[in-house]
Length: 165
Length: 283
Image (cartoon, rainbow over the protein chains, first blue to last red):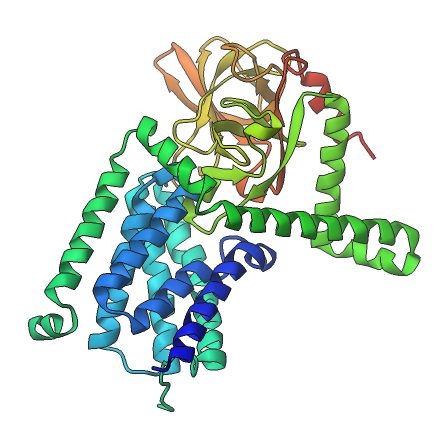
């Protein structure tokens, strides 16, 4: 990877973080708008080793916990697991394909919401069902679409090779 | 699989992962007195620029919508824009907020709700007003429709609001005519009755008709008297002839709130019934 690509990679990730705190609130219902912060983490994990991915996931989760203190620590746990599993499974199982990466974004978002909802212990069964079967899949879908768009537009700068398969 | 794991995740990676998981579990078990200062420190340092960005974006979008509303009143062509459902509801909410502010006269701080993406957002959320604007812990947080929750912790520029949906939320309440007193708490049940409140501890001989408005009673000195909480839906349960519990439909849903008012100062310590009763009569 060239040095300029490395800078572009982090500029794109920083752009996603800015989108999270600026544009996201204007993209409709909070429960289904794409989660750009998680998307930045997942894109990072595509290229990074599982250890650093878990560490970055932990930091991202901890920062999110400071914003939603109802279940402090749960976000850190969820993002740590997501970071590690995403990086590990990407290296072991997944091919460099746009739709495969989209599926990774979808599954990662849904699994993050599952861990947060289960481990927070604050959601009742009915709310939990709606969250996991309705709102989370919709948010996962919008996040996956946003992620595929980012990879399609900037995949070259992210040094992620996308096959035609 | 094991070979693949050894190949793609080194021992150092696994150790980092285990370390992060243990730190996360430690964070989950932190007591409130350690957790809150730590979370506050993060909000005031690392997250401060991002929260400022989100706040500015909310202010910018609110300003644009207000500008659109003014243009819509002035220009008949732009009037059609007010029929857009989202713009119209936003406009009505801001008007209601202004009306409530006028009736409260003073002793409140307006704030934007900085919603986050996580499922627990409706239980606690961050608002864009903090200690610098006079917000104190346990201050009541209201919208024009009624009670949203109370301030849990306060930073310099932001505050964390614990909404009525939080499992630990409790408020002393009464019927609007003062005939019945009880404690309001989240109903916390399954199915279609989720996101409802319950009025506990009502004596068995006192029947509360469906539709009775429930307001804060002011007992305990935390929440002022007269803030609308909701309306009785039906009886939720009975305790062997001693007491009844009633289901209450909340006046406001935390996830739908975009702007709130935090009640501060001594001037709002009286009875606020008049401020909320006249809600809906404003043009």
